[in-house]
Image 1: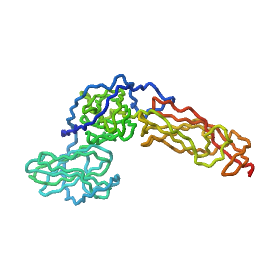
Image 2: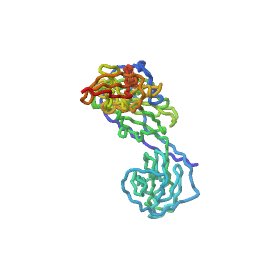
Image 3: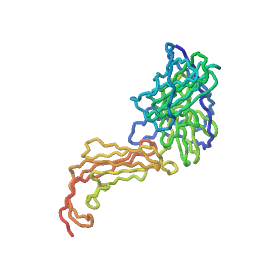
Image 4: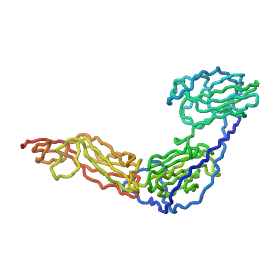
Length: 461
């Protein structure tokens, strides 16, 4: 077995931002009246004990990855000249795809004896997202290859070039984050002396769903106000960056948990280390941008199965604009009767969550609980995610009911006519729960009437 060592230098470019510090602490001891399971295992941070006053942290981002691959010395492959086109199309993947040239395996070193003016093509199937490096090595002054990497995005044999290397050194290399798909490696002879070169594709499928985010410039953009990140460092040199931009000044909290990682936040042109298991609170200005960086902890061996959890959220300060109604045309119960909210088969609900500035909180969960006799003993738990303005809304469809209660005869105007009516109905309850709002209580349970039958006894005029 040969061991090939490839040095990958990770970008450490930083972007300048300005944030205001806040000494306010987060009290996580207060809980909503109904506990709801955390969105993500391990994502609940502990109570903060200190103000946000932390020393700066300096981390070395240069590292190496060692890939062990089987070497195949028993065969030399010779391919025909490639005639592929180079057009851009949207991605499409199929495991029934027929390669346009010789299919080879990733993480295996192959031997090639290049000929003068030779063009060689190899196909690699990647059914999973991966960190991949295509490379050709063992080159010399009289033995040079150019390397090109393509993807057949649509699966129709039209190709997107992802990268190329024509270095006049001992190695050509193209590094990509590969989505599941069909990839081609094309090697073009620049000079041949009859000796061999070796090539391979080193693939690491332990990547998380936030890659590629290995620099501040490629940081994952947190667009929601409620961010719960579960991710890993897929190799010892992996560095994960996250970005959150503020459209207005408001209170934000963040924290992380993880055993094998170091995490820092970028504030006032420097990095500050975060302590695992603590919440930190800030009130940045409008236009400020927060960056978070996660790196491998020094002296700890990398384990891609060891996940970390990073929370970056906007605390919910108010719950308002809640409403229950229906678009169905109902006579309803007699005037002044209770419950006031009355539905038949359609129940519409909505509510709004706002932050410390009174602006809507996006990405938060609102749960709507309701119970009616026709639905059995257990309450129905519906939920919706708040939009950019902080509103969540949904429609519930309820089966027909029989009616345990009878109104008796009553007089009511309906569609412009006065008549004597009689109705049967059931009584249930409803309430809202805000799982992510420690400082807010859930709404009190309230009654709800489901109209089962309405009968016109007599028109009076």
